[in-house]
Length: 260
Image: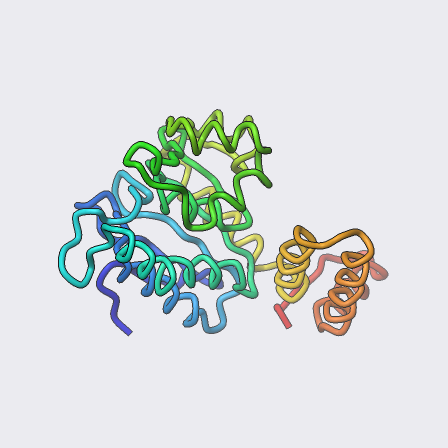
């Protein structure tokens, strides 16, 4: 399948999705959101996902300059784009059965900020920044921002981001716990791929189950979470990787996980 706004590459066991509109700072029209969802449905044997942007930006947000069928301006246009394209993309990314690493190579604004924070690990170049730009143009956060930001950094800082509409540099984002870490620009892609590859070589069933367990636990009480964990342990415990992990532990040798 060919894509208009993204690239899907496979680097060993890692599926690499690249936002590919560098001339528009990877502004994300509904088409791009749909293509990201399509790419996430085409992972094949990939055991991890790496999401990044081409050029000097990760994603500058929704493409407000789009015309015609791609236009997302106005209340009706925004609602249609969110319910039919952007929201399904965020949900699809949250439900991927393998670990997701996001390499933020530049500005991540608007829905691009939500996308940047939707993975399991977000690594950002030190020149990058995160911006909830909506209030600056009289809009409200979307892409799940109002759900994820308070959970990552607490209400006070989330409100700071959303109501003041100020840039949060990568180093500050790391200090706040908004992202996994900030690295030198030149090291970003290598570090992100190394992490994605490390995860891909791990016990994929356990890692995929773990990310779903955490997602459900965020909406559950302790008693419900204990049941969710038991269900997850049942699933992981029946995997070939669990058998291999226990055998390797007992034999005091290195594990050889296959993702099964």
